[in-house]
Structure formats: C-alpha cells, structure tokens
Image 1 (cartoon, rainbow, N blue to C red):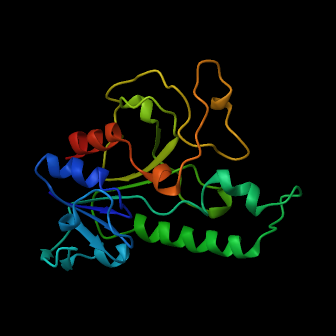
Image 2 (image 1 turned 120 degrees about the vertical axis):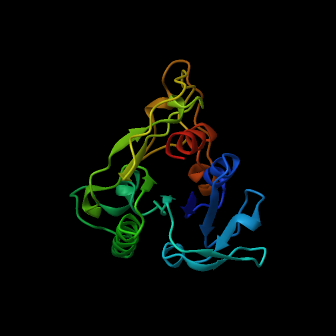
Length: 218
C-alpha cells in the first residue's frame, strides 16, 4: 500500500509500515528525526494528501496516483482540552483572543485533514475542547494497551478503518504528559512522577501503537 503519515517528524509510524513492506512516507514542515530523509516529504501536508509528483528530502520524485491510507497527527497545541485553562477565565469567557483564533485555525486544519480525498484515514489527537467543534472521535487508546507502560489518553478518528485492537496490555508506571494543572497519575501509589518533556517527545507515537497500526491496518 501507499501510506502517507501526515504531520509526523519522528517517522515512528512510517518506519513501522516500511518494515512490513509498504511504500510509506512521512510528511511535515520539519525535517525528520527518524533517520530516513529518503522517506520524508518536507512541506505542506495538505498538498501531499492530493498525491501527484512528490519529492522526498533526498531529491527523489515519487509518483503517487492516490494514497491507499493516511495516518495523520495534526498539531494539537491549541485544540487539546488540557489547554482550556489558558483560553478561558473563571467565568468561562475567552481571555486570550489570539489563542482563540489559533484554536479556530487548528480546528479548520484538522477538518481538512479528516476530509482528505483518501479512502482510509486515521487522525490522532488528544481529546479536544468542545468549543473547537470537531467531530466525535471513534475510539480512545492508551500506550499501556500496546506494550508501552505509560498512560497517554489518545483519541482516534477513523474513516474506512476498524478500531485498533489492544495487543499487549501491561501495567502503566505513570503518565507520559501532565494535563491541565496537573495529573492524578503523578500522585497515584506506585506511579512515577511525570517528567517535563519537550513538545517533540510528547508528540511521538509509541512503538507499540505504531506496530499495531501497521499490523492491523496494513
């Protein structure tokens, strides 16, 4: 299959599909950190979704008549419900107009990704704010359901794909990220204190989830 992994610089999902023989490409405005520029389209993901003659970072051009599948990770900074404390005051009124406009722009981008002309689509994001007006997600997954012992509540919006089935449920040791003003995972008995992680670290797809996507959807 020809698979586009949109808004992915880590190449975790791209490499999982490549390992199983698929023609997969990551795409992002950033260069990849996954070590395979020959599989990376650096540029506008909305343009890449249309297919056509696409150039990877090694200068090679690839003729993509149409994509068989897309897995997308659109930016969530201004969409996630965890960020609502920065947007609203105690009276639930918008206190940051600039952030509100960025949230609207992010929501529009999300909808364009979800409505791409591709038959099989998975869009991944944290739970969004209701005010963003996004469609209802199809399912919620956690890394610890796929062999990686962390909690990181992740929503999947699916078109033409079955729900992702857990592959190896393990005991979580803590939360991968802190949401809102803090996380109950940090104080739960036996859980590790949540580290401060960079945006790139927080956004990376866990290997167990990437493998499950490639095995079950590939």
